[in-house]
Length: 258
Image 1 (cartoon, rainbow, N blue to C red):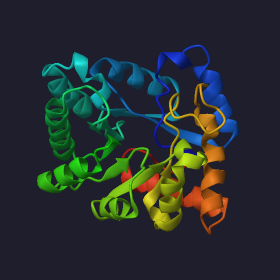
Image 2: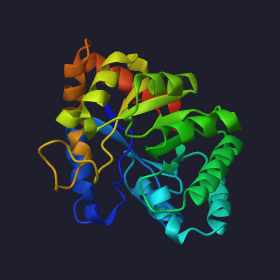
Image 3: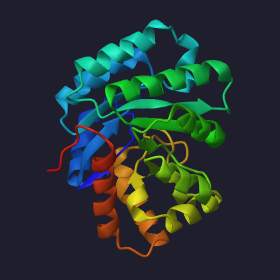
C-alpha cells in the first residue's frame, strides 16, 4: 500500500470529484493521503474531510505563501488546534521559508521559527516548504535545536543538503520534479541517498508530472512517481514502495499500519 505524504486534497478544485479521486486512489493501492494545512482558515475543513474520508490525515500549519493575511492570533489558534486534535494530527505543516515570493522574509522567518517552537512544545514533527532557502532552514533548525524531525517537502537540494537533513531527523519528499528532464540534479540525488530517507508525494493539485503541465495534479499519480524513482535506483518498485511507506510511518504521528 502506498502513501501520498503531501497532497492538498482540501483545495476547492477537488470539491466536485474528491470522493471519486479517493476511490480511484484506493484502487491503485494508495490508502493514506497526508493533507497539510496552508492557513488558519483551512484547518477546520481539513479536519472535517479527514472525518469523512479515513484515508486523509490532517496537518496544520501556516504556509509562507499565505502570510499576506497573517494575524498573530493564528499562532495561538494553531496551539489550540494541535491540542484539540492531538490524537489525529500527523504534523505541523505546511510551514517554511520561500525566497521566491514577495512576502517579507523577516515575517516568514518569525512565523516559521514560532511554528517550530510550537511543534516542539506539542512533540510533533514538521512538514517544511522551501524555495531558495535550504541554508536558511538548516541554520534555523540547528539554531533552535529542533529535534522533532519531519519531511522536507519537494526536496530539490544537493546531496550534502540531503544528508544534512538526514542528520537532523528529516525525510525527503520525492514528487513530480523527478519526471522532468530539467530535474537532473534532484534525480541524481534521490538515486544516491539511502532509501530510508525518502517518502513519496504529489503536492496535488500543484507540481504536475512531466507531460501533464497545465493540468490538475492528483494523488493518483503516486504510482507513476514510484515507477520513475525505481528507474533511478537499484531497488525494485515493490521494495521502494514498502520502505517509503515505513519512512512515513516512522516520521509522522497518528498514522498506523493496516
